[in-house]
Image (cartoon, rainbow, N blue to C red; front, side):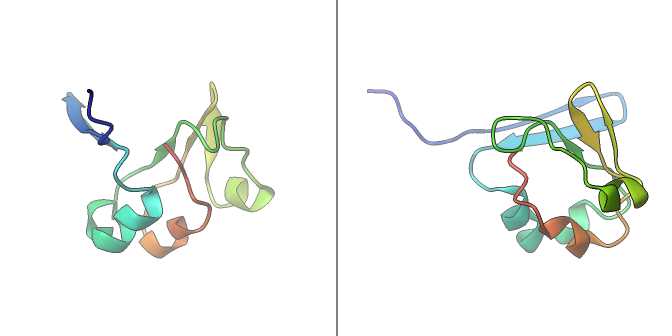
Length: 88
């Protein structure tokens, strides 16, 4: 019988690094390791099985969407990312 335990995958390409896991959602990750995103960017590929639809406020603060992926501005205040329950 196969294990249903979520796996964690990391990777890199040039200066880009990523982590994908089913063990924690973004909010849990930020609560445990907030310093990992300071000065970086977040790309949201899916929220509840579809693309993240940006609000006017998110667009005003620098979020952009291209090809179904939402991109954050450079993260300066990690706590501001904790609202939304991002899935992927």
